[in-house]
Amino acid sequence: MPTRKQIYDSPRQAARRASILQATRDLISKRGYEGTTVRDVAELAGVAKGTLYNIYGGKDELIFSAVVDVRDDIRERTLDLAPRPGLDSILKSDRAVIEEIVRTPTYAEAISRALFGAPSARLLVPSLIGLPIELTRKELESAKSLGEIESDVDSDLMARQLVMQRWGLIMALSLHQLSIDQLEHEVTHAMVRILQSVALPETRAMLDEVLRTSK
Image (cartoon, rainbow, N blue to C red):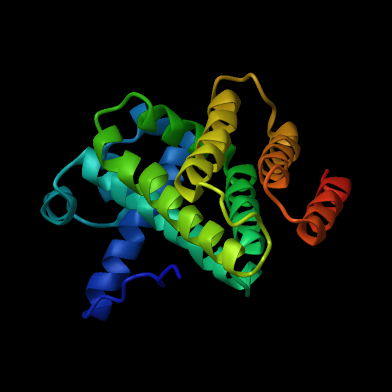
C-alpha cells in the first residue's frame, strides 16, 4: 500500500519545506516550467535563495520535489477513495489524478512538458511513470487474488499499458489535442476498456456500470 507523506523531525523544517513546495506549485501553475525561477520561489516562500539551494540544490531538484509533493497528495486521496485493493484502487487512482489535473490544468501541462523534454525528466520518470507502473502491477496481482481478472494476465505488461495510456492522454491535453472537459471521459474509457479485456464476468458488469456513469 502507498505510504503517507514523510514526517520531518523538526516542525520548523517541515513548515519551511511545505512553504517552498507550495510556492513552487503555485508558480508552476501560473507560469509553467520555464517561467518558474528559484529566485521567485524563494521570494514567494519567504526564504533566502541560498537556503533554498541548500535544501534542494537547484531548479530541477525543486521541480522534482514539487511534483513528488503532488504525487503524494494524489496517493493519499487514492487511499481515502479506495478502501479495497484491486481494480477499485486502480480506477480510483485514475480519478484522483484527473481531479488534480482538472483543478490545475496549467500545472499538469508544465509537468508533462518537463517529463518529456526538460533536464528534470531523469528525476521525474521514475517518480511519475516507474512508481505508478509498480503500484498498478501490485493492484493487478491483488485483482487476480480477488477473482476480478483472469489469473494468467501479464501484470507487468498491463500495468505499463494502463499508466502509459493515461500519460498519452495527458500529453494530448498539453498539446491541445484534447480539452480539459474531455480528459476525464477519455481516461476513464481508456482504462476501463483495457481492464474489460481481462475482467471476469462479475467484474465486467461493474466496469460496464463505470462506463455508463462516466461523463
